[in-house]
Amino acid sequence: MIGRVLVVDDEVDIQDLLCFVLDNAGYETRSTGRGDLALELCAQWDPDLVVLDIGLPGLSGLEVCPRLVDMDIPVLVLSSHDKDDQVVAGLELGAEDYVSKPFNYKELLLRVEKIIRRTRNNEPQKVLHIGDMLIDLRRSQVEVRGQLVNLTPTEFKILALLGTHRGVPISVETLLQEVWHVTEWTNGAEMVKVNISRLRKKIEIDPSKPSHLLNRWGYGYLLTDDPADADQGGV
Image 1 (spheres, rainbow, N blue to C red):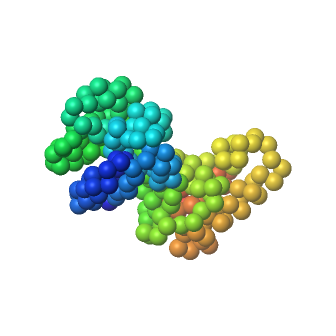
Image 2 (cartoon, rainbow, N blue to C red):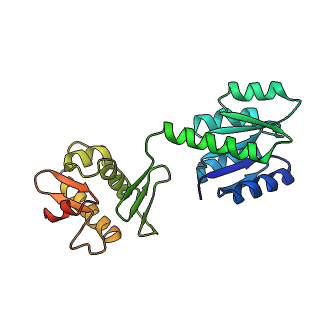
Image 3 (cartoon, rainbow, N blue to C red):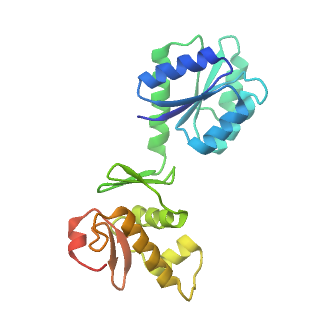
């Protein structure tokens, strides 16, 4: 899967055709014919791109487009060849590009690929690879050795913070401030320790001998994939 694409068009045949073309190119797709459902799907599924028909009934494409832009989701506008004014309006509302119907499939795929690549290159890193662990910051998901790990929101925040500062110890005080948004907490250090222990049970092969989620006495906790870090001890 090289990206998630949501197809939004009120014509079911076009939905099916676009999804078929995109699926065969390696994309994961979903589709809908309604603007309101498109917004719901985007909130739940978080696609890399929305292919949006401007001429939707009900909540129109011109109404949906700026909302998608506000969600930081790039938009490729679909429009009939005789609706140039709609294309211009869509681009003015923040769409990345457009394709006119009837469209050439190779051109469509090229534009989809370019938009996704461009937006990914312009964004901060959203997926962290640390050893056998994958931390998806955008979707708040963690995989360890290819398996999705069920984390609480607090556990994910801790792991994400440590992951974005890979190899650098983060103090208990910083963890309390960034994760719990407090500067003083009587049992704060113990709360951090409990959550670290739970995380180790979920991500480490041997939680009693962690190789990724480590403690540096006097400095804090760190997340690493460097064996040399683990050799320094401190759990």
